[in-house]
Image (cartoon, rainbow, N blue to C red; front, side, top):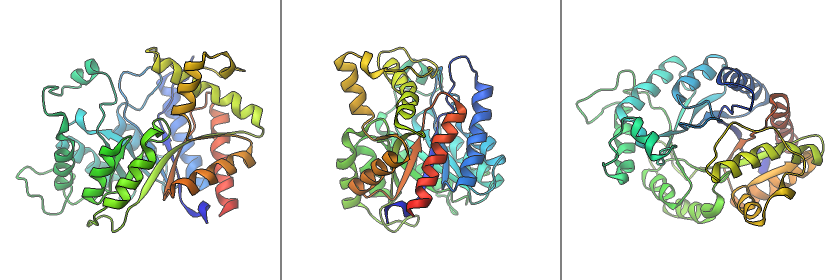
Length: 332
């Protein structure tokens, strides 16, 4: 039965217009506490830098905030952008999180910088280094977290932490690496769906079992804007739609309030761009959302969905996740 697959949450700690990072981080913890009660599997936070509308830049710190305020839900990074960090620092951070919250921490790893070149340079990385060092960095990190590291440098905490690693991707590169290393694969279909089916096929066909995982495991990002009726849901979705158009137009900002009839006001190229990037979405009343979720899972064979709901009003955002959890329970 499709609904037996776990549902999880991806949160960017959105900073809404007129609000601030303190309120966003309070909302993040509140959503995580609700998510735990509603039966979500895991709660992931993403690393982005220099974005006026995202408060999760210091991702490991926010994970600690969420894990400290919850007790059973898995918490983790979706993901840590490895080019921005030395593998040793990441091993120490996540080794510390695992020591604080044993058996609850996940570490998703991404290859993109999660920022622009100027910001990437300010993150103290040498931009002249080989851009294709990501596979080596992942393996170095794996070694630090293992029981018997081959390297002379030790990650303390970190050694023996066995934090589950995931490879994140929005192209076939991540799919190939996850398959080669025998790691679970999380695809960013919630904003970059173009290569999703191709990446899934590559991953599943080339998967090599590992100590962590014996068969392929795919988690897919999916946008949900659920409300008690279709009109409300489309109204709520307009905040995310505006934010995306602003971002792609080089004007990243805070999450804007919803606008009635927003899609109808767009020029055809902007509308086409939105339709493409947000094609993996469910918008509507519960019955409509259930139908769209079911169709997506049937089409992809996903093992887990990572639900993201960038909604301006916190109470309405909670309601969207609550409806999604209710659907999951009913259909299971």
